[in-house]
Image 1 (cartoon, rainbow, N blue to C red):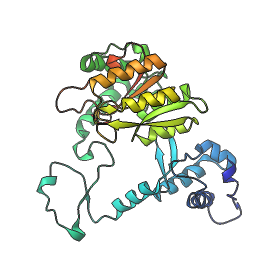
Image 2 (cartoon, one colour):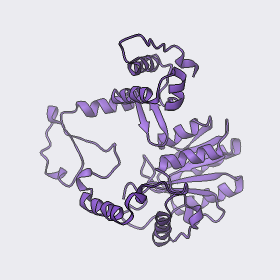
Image 3 (cartoon, rainbow, N blue to C red):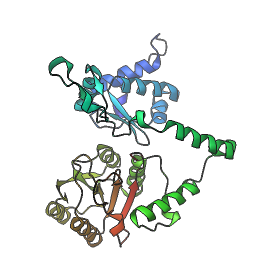
Amino acid sequence: MNKFVSIHLDRSSETPLYIQIYTGLVKLIENKDLTPGEKLPPIRRMASFFNVNTVTVVSAYKRLEADDYVKSRVGSGTYVLYPSEKGDQEELRDSKELIEFTEEAPELNYTKGGNLIKFDFSGASISPKYFPVKDFRDVVNEILDRDGGYALEYQKSSGYQPLKESIKSFMKKQHHLCVPLEEIQIVSGAQQGIDILAKAFLNYQDVVYVEAPTYPGAVNAFKSRDARIVEISMQKDGVDLEDLKQNIQKNPPKLFYSMPVFQNPTGYSYSQEKKKELLSLSKKYNFYIIEDDHISDLYYNEKPTLLKALDNSDKVFYIKSFSKL
């Protein structure tokens, strides 16, 4: 917290405390005392440091995010934006027309110059236009009618039992995986799952392998544990095994974070041979693999095989997201 001692709060000033904190953080970011990708302290810790209530810090962080200095990630924290990320958001806001890529797109009149149409692919989420609002409302009402206020109670820390049973059935039907209920953990999202594994496994200077390029949220989670990040290059059929083997000889990892199916951001998928070789290496050199399955159900041709489905040595932690379905 040493870098925040330069922020002095004048409690007699008419300027709200959250604005004073906001201004001080902006100065640290612009002076590069807070670097791109760096995680800001948790809200409670920052509130304790400045001796203010948490609402004050929340307001300061929200103002920073609104002005594109930081980005908040659910279950992970608040991170300083890279200049390219900030520029992208400003460009999208300033564009004369911003549309979603929908079935209507082919009918649009594409023109050059000032009427350039920009497509926003950044969200990686389902268009709100096609969300089944009525069906969703009916299901929510049905549950509330059936369970009343009990539907809003806290569940076991491992997750809602009927949901776990549904996931078990889904994995058996879709991926031929028989998963015991006690091995299924419900989390708020893939990012939280990555964070939990990082906290459970990583200590200072432990080595983590990631694909290059990869999902920055995972990298930030590993960096928050002071891990050493080693990037392994990607090929069209998956990770570069020669690059992987050379690095293992020098610095064997504790974890390898991987997206074997439709890797983000390349879109590449691992070949069956590379999946098997990766599993063989994990067993030989005793490291664990985090398989981040964010979109394997959206395939066009042959259904992809999960790395977890080939894992006979319990070396794969499988994280599944349903947000793209």
